Image 1 (cartoon, one colour):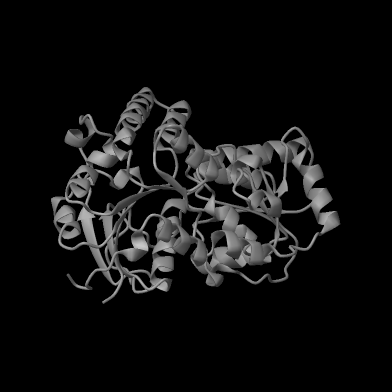
Image 2: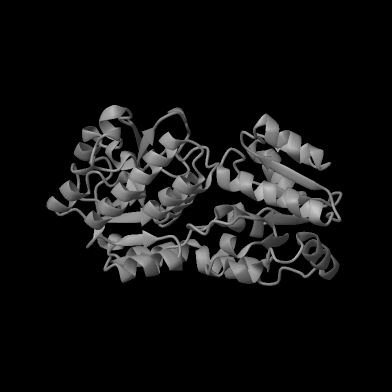
Length: 376
């Protein structure tokens, strides 16, 4: 007899190269550490199906998203309606193992699962309707504004179907929102592992900003860095690293005399994170918990962050919080001069975000008491 769990992911969590899928990857890995046989179900739409998942799963199944007009015109949110595989439902109903649905995206079959007396929980990666409302504000075209605005309203309505199901919230502020709305909630932070720790290496001084450079939020952060450098020049070189920067963005970065590293591989990015003098964790949207903050903190390097990047997750005490009223150049100068050691940082992070925290939450929602046969 073995503990068995189904994990239904909104996307293929490999490579774990952006926040949402990294969260899925790390939690599945934590479940394996806790002795679970993990059955991973993934909606695949561009990330491929030929991955070695042995580190995080014992079985893996892929499903196509049903993109197109029919999903777009549904009364359900597009991100939910397009993930409605009947094959997935059959597999989930074939045994009595608990089911972890990753994101509101994966909740199409939640009524059927409850009707069949299945133990279900939903990992809320953020408050989706608020996220889409913010996308509406950032939209460049009328059609985008209409789509994001409608999706936000649909998500807010469909969210009500999740009442009575444990919602595993990624941040304490998200949990407070759902508690106030009468939902059953538990705070479950990102799960970290000792092998995420990157030992620092010495190099010439530089500051590092990294992220998906095609995402509007991250482009906004880079624009702010450039604006701050013009306001008062930084004392050290800056490297901007990440996925898919536009030609125009690269020109702007290099126009500051900075270096842009486009589409770095995992090892290249890890080396940059280990060797930089400090991490610039700049962002102005407070949804969820930013996994790149945790990754940066695990290098032991100094981290300058905006309050939106840390929230009230406990990460703020390990960062140097920058108030944009003051020049960023002055903050950089100050933290480099002080050069404060990262005392007890790894110990604190392990206590707050380690596998034991995952175990505690699974016990709270009753998942650790459910046993299933492998291969059923």
